[in-house]
Image (tube, rainbow, N blue to C red):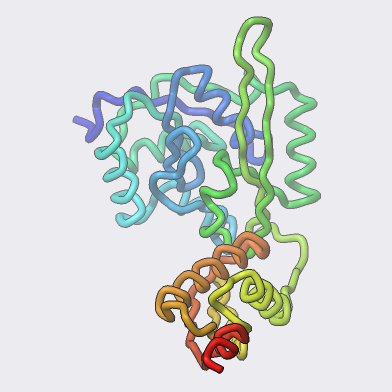
Length: 285
């Protein structure tokens, strides 16, 4: 007996780069399916609820292994989420029948009741266009909004993709946001962000924060997962120093992640000194 024998399992199958992830939410919605398994992610509507994207893997072989949930740790995370959310149906995305069957088997899901094929949804011309973009630009689509996966794809260049599709007169249109990335294994070039850029972002945030007079010193350490930052600031007299530092740190992290698409791994901040506002000094006199 299967672990989740009451769940109805669908599959959406098509060759790599033909637009499955691009159309996944639409196909799921047309079949009243709220849960999708795609490239290592377990997605509910537009939210990632478990897993991590296989598109982060350094090679195509590792990508396939991750997408199949070959390790016990990967399987357990998805299975625990399935137990928690108790979906009535799930749609698995894959490049072949064997792949979706293997995913269902590895996760302990029931047999797939229906396979939907990409050529039932997309024209030959649309699939060729999607394939050309994959090959020439190395772009992949993940069927969730950018904010859902931004932290998992630090520095991979995330672009939101808005989808609008009419469903006919008198029917609500299909509207969705997806994310475009360039995985490591298909990356087409390099980009570098200077340390000075991070310094200027923090200096600007200091200018915008009444409790902080200025940034005195900054040190940046770059990691594969994202930067770690050490900062010393001058605090304005009269503010709660601990609250001021915590608030400023949080604002800086948010702004850096928004502007650079990099996940800040750590942000240590120290109050190096105090400055007394001029009007306070005048009152003392």
